Image (cartoon, rainbow, N blue to C red):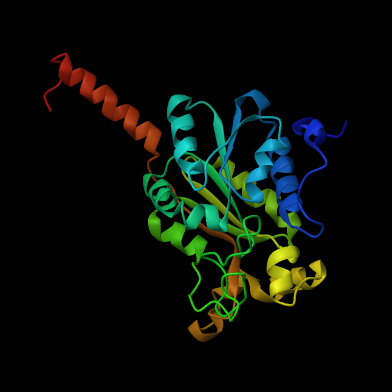
Length: 277
């Protein structure tokens, strides 16, 4: 048995993901990161919501919860509060995390709770009908945008930085070898860590936008992105043409569970008369 196989529930295979889907690449990178850090399987929890990417919790042999649409972060927050010793992961898609789950997302970033969230960004609702999502590019097509999407897309990583996450990184399935390190650094960060990964959906997004060939979608990722160090050297007009990849922010700041524990300890001392508020 390979190191990766021991983390899988092989009785749940074959998986439901389409040929050419990037989700398997992301899942493999996640498991390699787990293995490199030699984390105890019994001390790892993985939480997901609804969507193609959220099926990942069914395939991994950890403590897992497959929750309702958009609520993965809410459940994960409860898990981390109840069992702060666990390493808690959240798997989510672009729609699950930034549409119905958008409010949970910005507040998890703001709180800086020690969760590692991996967002599989495929630019569409792949499982539920091909509707456009908050990250569908401007004037690209979807089942609910047959003449093109008139809305501007979210910059998920930029939103996380602005909302206060202490670690934010972006990668692509084209640069699969980079993903392990981005995820490892997110796990090692004591606070909210977001790893946004562009993962192709040839079946729904690709077919709607003349990119049904998985190789074409991978090359689109290559042309769309640029390492952040190189991107930072561009002027504003040129920056608008690309999405920077790599570590976008990595800062030290107080973690929510630790701060809440301090608040509880203070409240107990006040109640006992040992401290004046």
